[in-house]
Length: 568
Image (cartoon, rainbow, N blue to C red):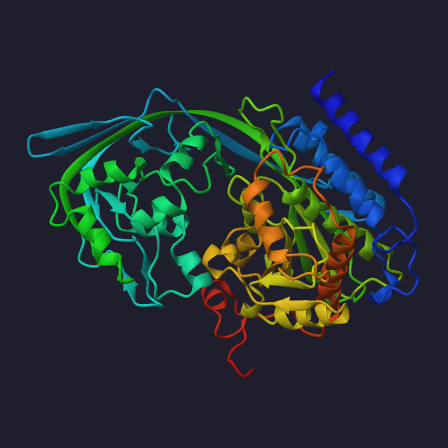
């Protein structure tokens, strides 16, 4: 069977599965509920959610890896559902597909070398025992030798009075930093300011030619070096622009490395302070200070490249107001997952049922509900099933930078990623809501359905910057990341423990599959709230606005969507 015929066959199987499960508008148990309180008489059909989830998380799709037959079939299925609901295609050339070219980069495992030089000393390190290195998106061979400078956390923020590069000359040198961040930074702002992408930008702007990360006892405890060894064969990915250049790559940076905790100490052997002394200086929460390491390093490696394509799937429900229909509420959910693991285990397919077949299924049901309204909301509703989230938010980053509708007319983003549907939740969390007037609409929607709106219970996890909504935030669009909360309507449920058990046991594992105990009341209620948030915003007199005191609004907001004062 050819690849195209195989994709068509998989898509047909999904359509048959959905047809078999379809019914009239239903409640959480699949029963008709004419008294549902949703506006516009749009009712949730959990049978459809079950069918979407059952197909998207099936073994037949082999984990939905971007560029694979399985992900192409998932995308075809989503497009077919959009067409069934009457959504207008908003991809390329009148289709639902926004086709993206990606570069896959694989490290040639025999190639990495790393040497440390100071005085008459020359230390050869062993890969991967002593160090790991990233792949190059630009070159198949890279080799750099340069002096090293320790830059603490390697973070700069004018807003918070931080400059770890102050007094240091890193032009033409390789910067060495420790994981973590300044304790003076607020959680969500700190997650952005201290992110890997931002640290890379700070280094490049100051002329660095390479970056090395050394461990601390805390980073080793939180994420052991041994865990990173599990990913040395993983393929890195980036999207390519019209000139074939990787979007996130910097030609200036020629080398990178992560060292294990013992090897990390060797970089400081000829420096003013040992690494142990640096660690000691950090124990009271103080930020480490930078200095020259009085040593040089050579880094080399080889990378293999393979270019592929994978689509975002985009559809629109046109608004009813002749003016406001030119503004869009954007729903996003990532359709990809991790594919098939390289493992000796019997079950190697990463089905991604919760992550994120569930979120995609709920987005599809939300699209059907909006399409079923006799009177459409005033603003248009834009649905985007994005690819390559698991590779670094790539599909959403591409769409946010190259949208198929004018960027200024996308007024808000509601992102659905991995709702944990294992208990009858009593609350939801809308990461990022406090940064904009979207919080008002989230509050209205949750109150309507008797569901509490909770604050972020895990600020240290930096979740606001870890899903696709963040791509839209960086383009100035007020956004939230909506997830189920940590309390249950059933007093017998230890909801937070159930959620943490999923994260510890099933997250990014083949066991995130259809054999988990799904709670369809949770799916029903989450879809209700999700629909209502968009409905409230789509019919509001004013577009959502960034709050005047929001760091993200001040950093990325535009003149047309930033409240001018706190009291305004």
